[in-house]
Image (cartoon, rainbow, N blue to C red; front, side):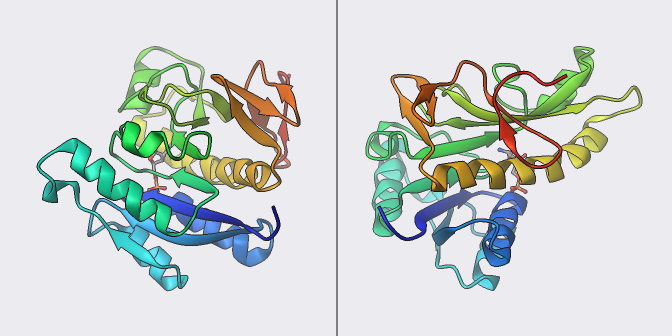
Length: 225
Ligand code: GRF
C-alpha cells in the first residue's frame, strides 16, 4: 500500500497524545495522514487541537444514544468514513463493542497508563504507588473486547520515586507516553506490526515481550539493563 497511512484518532479529553502525533507529522518524524479525529465529548480539548491542525473532526456524544449498540453502530459508520488503516484510541474513555471492533480488528490501538497486564482500568498511578511498585509506565496494545486486555505492542517504563504522588507520576509519564505513541505509530506506519491470533507480530516474528522505548526513542525487543 502506498502513501501515508490514513489514521483516525479517537479522543475524549485533553488530546496531548494526539498533539504529539500532529507535531511528529509536522516535523517529518512521522509519515501518517491523520484524516479524522472523533470525540464522544463535545468539549474535548483534543477537538480544538485537531481543528488548529486543519484535521476534520466529528462529535458523537454517547449520551445521545439510548443503547450502547446504537452508539457503537454510529461510531463504526463514522470511523469508516475516512477509510482508516489505523485507529488510535488516545484517551478515548469509552468501552467499545463488536460493532466497532469487528470491522477494524487489528487496526485499532489503545494507550494505557500502566505496565500491562498490571492495572487495567482507572487510577493506575495511585494503584502502582500504593502497591509499592518501583516502576510505572505506559503500554500500547491492540484493542480487543477485553478492557485494556489486547496484545501489548510496546511499553515505556519510568521509576517511581519515594515522594511521588499520582499527580507527579502522571506528569512525569505524560511526555514519555507521547514519545512512545510516536515511536509505535511509526512502526505501524512502516507496516512492521501486525496482530495475529492474540499475539503481536513484529517484522514477521512473534513478539514474546513488548517492545521497549529506549532513551534514544527507538523501540527495541528484549529486556534492558
Ligand atoms: C493517557 O494517559 C492515556 O494513556 C490514557 O488517557 C490519557 C490521555 O491523555 N488512555 P491525552 O488526552 O492524550 O492528553
